[in-house]
Amino acid sequence: MSQRIPDRVDPRRLAEEGKTLSGSLPVDALPRLAALLQDTTPAALFTLRFGKDESRRSTVDLGVKAQLVLECQRCLSDMTLDVDAHTLLALVSGPTEAEQLPKDLDPLLLGEEEYLDIAALIEDELLLAIPASPRHADVNCSIHVEEKQNPPAEQEQDNPFAVLAKLKGSENHN
Image 1 (cartoon, rainbow, N blue to C red):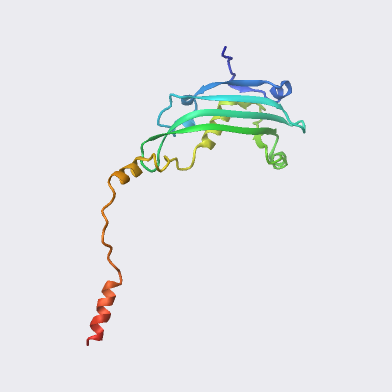
Image 2: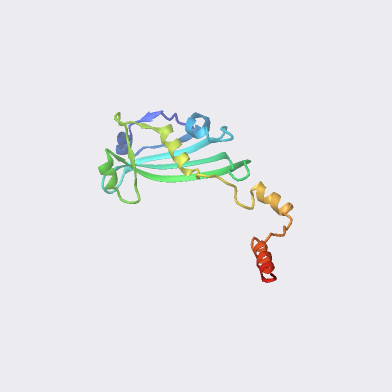
């Protein structure tokens, strides 16, 4: 049975209750991410586990899985990036509180309304998973496949000092 996931939730209340939300979100509903993709038909699967840590901080354990179709920046053909991201977030009120978090927690600063936009959080996580310059592995990239099939002909390289050697040789004969 599929549960309906609200657009916005009160994460502090859900953390007190120890709730878990999971579902799927169409990638085309994430405009910043969709602009980077070659195919926006897949959906992202997510799980949000709300709770408290040993210091009684409200936390969100976020897991996101998706197959994103991007453009390879080397050969410009489509490539699939399998994303399986996992992040442990702590709800914070400001930068000072964020700086005091242990290394295993990332800060999650809520807006003035103190609500969490689930789609924006999932979109942020997927955007962070995309490399700055997505590329196929060398063995899978069509440019490297073409180079192996048609290796460049070896060219004789001109020695830039050959002209100097000729000039020096002509000076010695004078």
